[in-house]
Amino acid sequence: MTKKIIIANWKMHKDHTEAQEFLESIKFTQFGNEIVICPPFTLLGDMQNGENFSLGAQDCSSLSDDKGAFTGDISAKMLKLLNCKYVILGHSERRSFHKEDNLQINKKIINAINQDIIPILCVGESQDERANGNYLTFLENSIESTIPKEFDEDKFIIAYEPLWSIGSGKAATITQIEEVHNFLSKIIRTRFAKKVKIIYGGSVNLDNASDITKIDNVDGLLIGGASLNPETFRQIALTTER
Ligand code: PGA
Image (tube, rainbow, N blue to C red; front, side, top):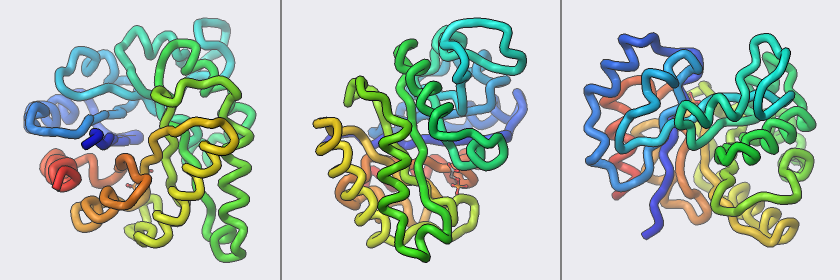
């Protein structure tokens, strides 16, 4: 069976002590799936030598993949030097609070790829788009305007994260996830002649994680709130193996 990918998105949570406590309370060798932790930038240095889990960042600069006069930005190369294997890009919180658009996200993806970091591209429709029935077209546009022409299918992940489900306690239903993942997989196959991993995010918890990971075309999970508590995260990761 191919390994699923279980990603913790810590967002703007945890200081050095809290991260240390989290890492000490989980034995990462117990997992059969790949575990990825995406802490805030400030913890990447502390966590760069962690064993049996992969490290991811939550963003990178669109302006250069290397260096430059870009106050506050962190380049993909800087992340690479800190052992980041992955970077989350285009998360809806970046799109809404930082006004990131598809063009910027496309540049970030290219910068990550240039540094051999695997982008985890987040796409998801709003409540309105779902209600008016335009969500599949919206998702197709999000994909087409952000994904570059050239990319390696083994080094690209799409995360379907409906905006209305993030942090709301209301995950998408099995039917909704199935429909969108099948659709996204078809788009990638037809437009790019490739097959990439497609993971689900949005109010994943211990009750729904196992059922969601069993759906066709669901290759893993992107977990926010429920990834902060080590025991909850451990149990979620284990339940995806059953
Ligand atoms: P949530 O967040 O699990 O807290 O809904 C998921 C995400 O934003 O990646």
